[in-house]
Image (tube, rainbow, N blue to C red; front, top):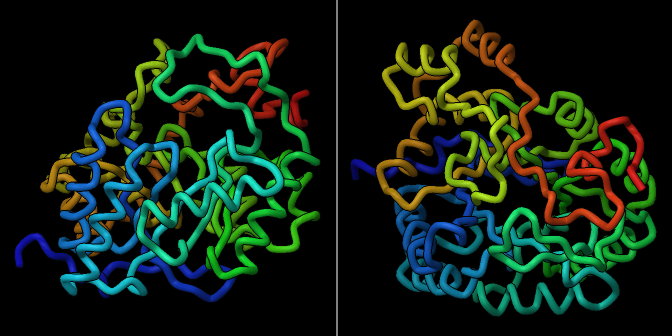
Length: 337
């Protein structure tokens, strides 16, 4: 089958628990550009071509459609449940005691699963915004990060883990100061942490901090997310796919620059989670992990193109009195209040 990549050939990452998971997955965030049925159709195609890791979230608004795809794939024998690593996330409006379990219950019902393989805390605070809002939207009830509120929510994830409803639990959109504050308090350490990672935003300090502590980095926006929501686009953004050094490496390998971004991510050690509704794209995304690796020299060149260009700035989560999106990311090394 020309478009099938044997999952056994795809490199694996070992979590601190000893579990091995694929080095690449498919993201499912497309709600600003694509209908839920388009996303779920892509998931169905990706399963058949060999993907075994799928990154979902309740706020994406498509878990019910994706759940039907999973159920059909299991029923038809295309893949067994235990062969997939399926993640989801608790959204900001369901933080706190009790609500996390309710959030996961809905996710499990929608995805038609008995458990998820990893359940993430999507953002480290309960600041809510309406899906699809513009970049100027602000919720007057938003608040700065609170260790106590974060840990109250994390305790619920630990409970979910204890109950076997999530084999692993993880964090997302964290900073080193926030991790320094909460990791010593965790009874169950996060197995994975999602963060924005692409050649022009490599976050070396945060990446190394997690890797040194046995926490697996998962990279969203791995090709620079050209289809990200319009509210997340600014004039200062740098397009990874147009960086001359990256374009030249792609020319040498006779591939699209997006493929170079993914090869770099996999060879660096993170788990990229690209998304596409186009079969030729998601097939090539998976195939690139098993053939024609980048050279050490090319990896060194790509390390040098880091522009510290954050694309998902999160300004819609700002609280009254915050100076700007930078306050979400603790740039001075302390938690911004």
